[in-house]
Each structure stands twice: as structure tokens, then as C-alpha cells.
Amino acid sequence: MSDLTKLSLSEAVSGLRNKEFSSREITQAHLEAMEQARGLNAYLTETPDKAYEMADASDAKIAKGEGGILEGAPIGIKDLFCVDGVKTCAGSKILGEFTPPYESTVTAKLWKDGAVMLGKLNMDEFAMGSSNENSAYGNVISPWQRAGSNAAIVPGGSSGGSAAAVAADLCLAATGTDTGGSIRQPAAFTGLVGMKPTYGRCSRYGIVAFASSLDQAGPITKTVEDAALMLGSMSGFDEKDSTSLSRDVPDFVSACTKSLKGMRIGIPKEYRMDGMPEEIEKLWQQGTQWLRDAGCEIVDVSLPHTKYALPAYYIVAPAEASSNLARYDGMRYGARIDGDDLNSTYERTRAQGFGEEVRRRIMIGTYVLSAGFYDAYYIRAQKVRAKIAEDFKKAWEKCDALLTPTTPSAAFGIGEVSDDPVQMYLNDVFTVTANLAGLPGISVPAALDSQGLPLGLQVIGKALDEETCFAVGGALERAARFNAKATRWW
Ligand code: GLN
Image 1 (tube, rainbow, N blue to C red):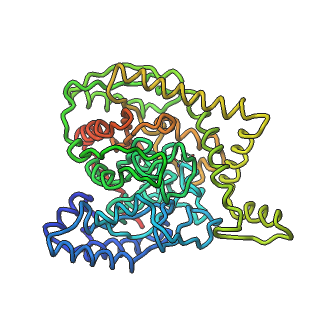
Image 2 (image 1 turned 90 degrees about the vertical axis):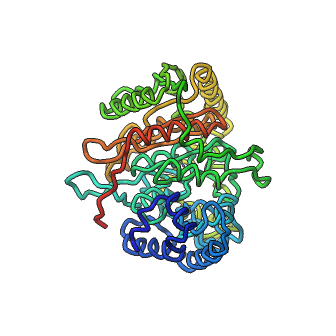
Image 3 (image 1 turned 135 degrees about the vertical axis):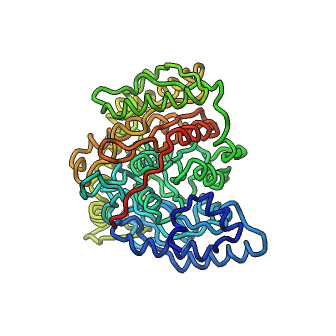
């Protein structure tokens, strides 16, 4: 039965609907695979009882000819999403044994459409990181390895547990969140599809906040069609999130096979970075050629403020984080480390409860928001953010979507970059711009590098035009015919 874990989400849903196998069977196959893969540290919490209960309910529905678009399909949930009655700790110790008494809107929608919950997935603490080395529960290990080496590789971050789990067939698909690249970068590092929708497309209600003006939920999946199917379920207006957009959810699945004839694809020249590995440049050119072959017109565009995106992001995101994380004071949530008085209890709880990177972000954020530096840093970064959004608006006069690499390199080894935060932040150079401008972006696996590790191409679309991202992503997927899988060693 273990072959059931190799199916794509769409294949599994149709197999379930046609009663080729039951939800209990495919759920069990995944739970067994999870048990054998504990060394990857992808799951923080496994929920087998809940999984079987949901699977049986799905089987009963399917027997009656009922059920939603994901009926019976087992998936994994990033530990940033609150799931009623299931421990949720955002990869942090400060949340202790926090078990939310409510459900995030995104997970509620997935369950309503019939998805089955396998467990909560490891992640960088509070979604801050690009390698999963910032998890308070130990790093995730990628199922991928460099050819001829058994050195442990990072799965990317912050949704690294999600990416590792999907890549190792420990769930059919997983939720992720993306504040600066945390869906697209881990997807690229593990040979998967990652989709960050337009800001406001998915409700943030019940998702532990990192930087509220940038955070978006989205899927990490094996195929573009799977991403479309899952995003369709996750999306939609929610009155519980004041930034949620009141728009109908288009048919993302049918967008994946739309013709690209006459579509204009922009190549932003500022994304051609100094020192970018030749392999990335080559892949980008290959992607351009694939789209030309699919009938697109390729145009050069300029996004002149790109070089300020990363610095602006690393001001805005920590500023919002320092404010969002102020609530973890040992009083109402999770862990408390008692001190001699109230202030020392706060101090001890926060000093011991947060990891190093989170403390660094809180300090940066507090600094850039402080009275003397607010104008010089925070206000300035907000102005840069507006300029970046304007750059995209101008580009849309010349093209319908942009093609870029997803990351400036393939995945790196555990410990290779972790002692240099600035080097780590450079991972986000091609992804943060879409967050700053609120635009949708998809990463599609496109090739293996010379060491045998996956590389991704990114398509950025206009606000609310996920359909074009899926159309271009689908075309790239068909052209690239990427079907490499990590060789099982775990
Ligand atoms: N790597 C980026 C950061 O550390 C992005 C994280 C994310 O998108 N959640 O902030």
C-alpha cells in the first residue's frame, strides 16, 4: 500500500472518489511513512487518532457519493496554523504546550473540503529563517542529498518541515506561510511547487503572526495543479481578518492548462545579481526559452528599486515582529519562567523562551521603531516599499507576469551558513519583493544543479492574478518535465 504516498494530491483525490482505495488506507500509508522518517524531524506533532477519525468520516461521505474537493486526502499543517485541540507552538519554546481552543480559517476551510490532518510540521521559530535551523525543536533534514555525499542538507525555511514532508512523501501536500519567501524558497530547495498568493487572498485568522502586513498562507505541493487545487480550498474572504479581500475565488485548476499564446513575460534586469552562480543564470535563460516556445513574448523590464528590497524587508518585518511578539510575556500564553518580580519574570521568560534569531529580530525591530530612529529606518523602509510596488505597477504596463529564479543558489548544508545572518538573509533576495508589494508568486521545480540538488523558477503575477501564475507555472512544469525525487536514505 505504500505506493499510495507517491500519488499527487489530484491523483489521490480522484482515486478516492473512484473508490480505488479508501481514505483510511492512504492515511495509514502516510502515517507509516512518517514513522519511518522521524529522523528527518519534519513533523513536530503527529495526530494519528485525529487522522483516522477524519479519514473514516471521509470514507463514509465518499460511500454516499458526497464529499468536498479534497475529500479523504491526508495533508500536513505548518505549526504556525492553530488547529483546535492540537498543540501549536510556531517552532518556539515560548508557547510551551499551547493548545488553541479555536481553528485557523485556512485549516477550517481545508477540513470542510475533506482534507485529513496528519500532524503539525516543523518550522523556523515564528517563521524567521531560511533553513529551519532556527526551530526550537531541532532542524529539519532535507530528504535531498548532494550526489555522492551523505552530508545533511537544509530543506529551506521557514516552511522547511512542510517541504521536507511533501518531498519525502510524508503527506500529499502541506500548508506553508510566506512572509519573505518561506513557501517559495523551501519548495525550490526540495523540488516542489510553492505558491504564495496575493496578500489578502487567504485569511490570516488563527495563524501565529510574524509580520502582519507581509504574512500570507499558501500550499507546498508536488505539482502545479495540486497547488491550484489546494489554494482554491484555502482562499476566500473572511470577516475575522480585516485585511482579507472580498473577492470571488477563481477556478485556479483550469488556469493551469491555459494557453500562453500572446502573453508577455517580463525579465527584470535587476535580478541579474553580481556573483550569481552560472547555473542559476543558465536555468533562467532556459526558462525564458521554454516560455518563448509556449508562445510568450519576452520583454526586458526594469525594477530599479530591487536592491533596496532586502534592507527594507529586514526593517519592516522585524518592526512588525517586535510588536506582534510583545504578547509573549509569560502571563497569558505558554511558558513562564518566574523571576523575583513582574519585570524579571517578563525578562527571564522572554530571554529564555525565544531563540537567538527571534531575539535578534525583536531587537532590530525595537531599535528601528524607537523614537530617535523611527524616521530614519522605519518610515524610510515604508517609502522604499511604496517605490517597489510602483516599480511593479510600471512593469505591468509592459508585461503580464515576471520570470525570475526563485533563489540565488541551491540548498546548502546544515551549519554552512547559519553563523552568518546576513548571508542567510540573502536567500530571500528574489522572493521578498513580491511580499513587499503584496503580489502572488509561484515557484516551480525546473532542474537539478551540478550537485544533484533541485532549483526552482519563480513567476510573479499582478495582484489577484494567481491564474496567470498558475498558467505560466503549468507551462514551465510541462516544459521542464522535472520528475527527480530524493533517493530514499532515511
Ligand atoms: N527568510 C525570511 C525571514 O527570515 C522569510 C521568512 C518567511 O517568509 N516567513 O524573514
